[in-house]
Image (cartoon, rainbow, N blue to C red):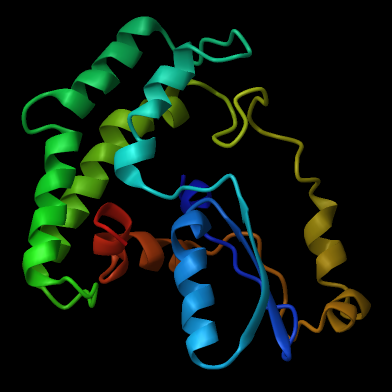
Length: 206
């Protein structure tokens, strides 16, 4: 589901930017804030909700938490978790592919420009494999919210009226926002995760 991967970034003022991100915003928010500050734009704060920060650190935890968590919830059965962990650790699996991606990135694209096609292809295939085989079963089989295992899908939070509220002219004016609020953008999500240079940044060192 693309909405799981999308990063939300809201620029709330001109004199000082307050950046609020979600999901893969955990990966991009620091870079966005750094880029803004390099242009002498003041960043007042950076908020990160349910962040996805590093594929090598977080991906192997997904199948573990799915069956061994503080809620006593089994999001799927143990055999699915074992298969997902096997996809992570086996020779040529997700972990090895991440190492290959990052080694290529270090050699051919150390500045994360996204201009090296080999790096983009290898890192893109790595991300697709890791996300699909290690994380993917949670979304496909659990019926639970990807950000809160205690919630089932469809989730009632955030409430559906929040988008309408945020798009009221008086709310936008109070926040200093000049564009409508959009909850999910498939175009932005796809670009941030699957197109260069983002794909090498997401799977590589970032």
